Length: 123
Image 1 (cartoon, rainbow, N blue to C red):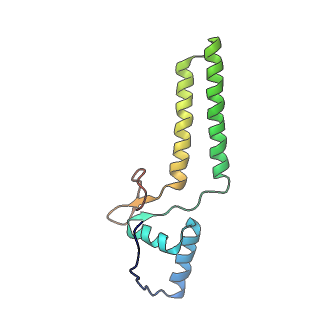
Image 2: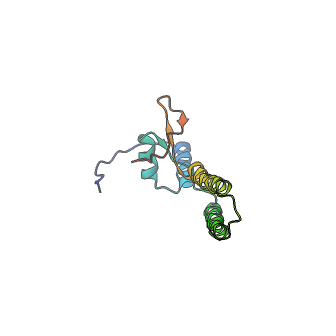
Image 3: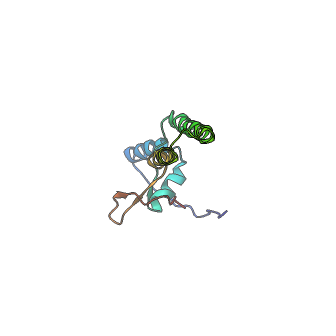
């Protein structure tokens, strides 16, 4: 792990400090990690809602149930594999979309505007 031994002092007025503290608190990061992400061109996302993890857990449970149903149906020959695979893929994509939308930081473009740059996380 790299050492961070260079200290930079930044002076803020009261309003700027309060705004920074509010933004940092929304992300759950330390103030230092928040600022490093911004310097790297990323805007950290807010913490997901409290029920986010339970929603993801529920979606995974549904996926597991689909797999069990598929195995049973495959043994009895009473399911359309193509339709089931399509639905299973939709479920996987939904889980990934929720995770992406809620947890991954967004990249800023050269103008400082937010843009989605895929799955690359800040350094």
